[in-house]
Amino acid sequence: MPTVQIATWDVVGPEGAPAIVFVHGAMMGRSVWHPQVEALSDRYRCITVDLPGHGSLRDRSFSLDDAVASVIAAIDDAAGGRAVLVGLSLGGYVAMTVAGRHPERVRGLVIAGSTREPEGLSRAGFHLYGWLLRLAPEGIVRPIALAWFRRRYGPILGRAITAGGHFAKGGGTAVRRLVGGRYRERLAAYGGPILVINGTMDLIFRIGAGRFLAGVPKVTNRVIPRAGHLSNVDRPEVFTGLIEEFVGGLAP
Image (tube, rainbow, N blue to C red; front, top):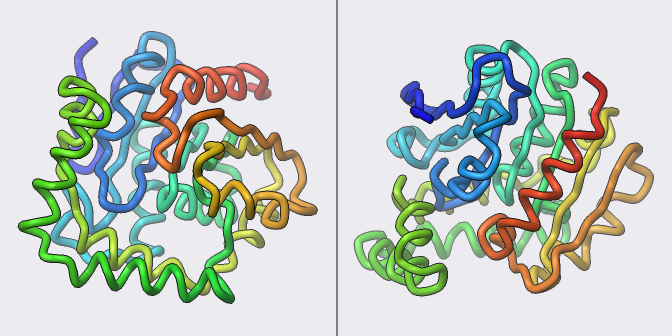
């Protein structure tokens, strides 16, 4: 099926099909959702967006408000104003913010690898990780990272998920600018159905999930065995199956 390319997002799937908007993590681009688009685009309208500092928006410094505006533009222009929203890592925090501010546009919310509030010791960790990415020489980091992905996931999948490039500095800025956002409050403010996914090997986010989700309504919490932080690529069939099960149970 042909891909419709609209500057900062791709659209694949039948017109009029239920829409799913995918939001990538730090340092990656929209191509990281290749396994999900390949599996779902025959029956869903799959929209993959780039965030500021990444991919087609690599020259735009990340801000949360700008990231939210990018996702909203994709929902309005490519999904008819309402969609299931799926976010991984950085994309999960952006997705929670979109859902909390604009619940009428989010039919259902899926977040993966983003169940820790960036406050306290975690606040320091987010800042440190972000600064390390900012200080790393991108000309050296990028080829090493791309080679690692191709070795870890094989040449075909590795190339597919990194086709949009690798953006250490943009990712570092984005991670630091998440600090202080109070994402748990935004998640609770959404009020709609939520699927939370973590990998068993993603200890930082899996272990923090219970506290982060306490008291938040309409949450289904799922853990994928033998998956790390990039759970959508570590176990793509399981991850995709969880999304499809979740979407299938939503009200029209």
